[in-house]
Image (cartoon, rainbow over all chains, first blue to last red; front, top):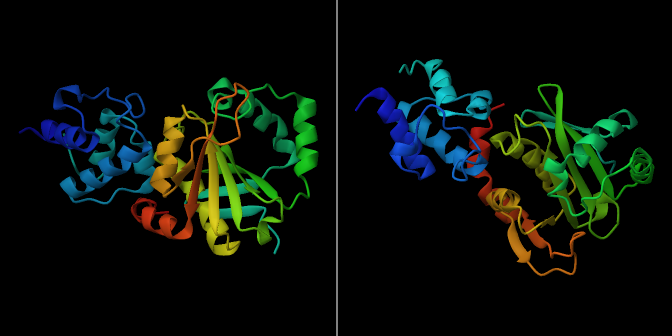
Length: 79
Length: 190
């Protein structure tokens, strides 16, 4: 599994949507299943998967899958 | 007890609305993206806004705050005593909030002002119960409130909006609040 697929898999599981629907352009609040509440579950899943602790500003700024990649790069998670 | 005009916590600042904020708040409140979730969707004129401000100034039963994040105004949050008594002496308080800034609308950030004011009501004002009235179609608000621990107390209230549709009444006691917000607090690391 590539690092990208691994990330997409975390998103798919946390948001409860098929892996095939996850791509860089997927954006917060554009689908019902990614709202402020499921966002919390997503953050917990990402932190556990990568063994990191995100700053709250990064939690707030994580507005798309692409943005998640940029933010995770700050925590040495490179894609 | 005097109701605080400035409350800081969870990365946000709540500042009591001042006269200089009135036009900004009026434009926010009249924005269809905001007003469609309000009990009254009527456009508010400058005169009505001024009258409202004069009516709430020195009214100890309600307080309205501008929410600031990183020193920028992003929305409004308010609290009103249900009985009409002073906020410092009432047991039930009705809450209201909207985020106008599109960058943060529907965002996790909305929990920050909500927790800040809820904490103030429960732990400083010693309020027993918080209430919220929500339009039936406002699923996001219902889900948001439920995450905070609110329970639907009635979905057939006597209240209704301008279109005559009933409002969902939700309530939150301190015990439910404490239980539900544990996981939210863990993610607010300011």
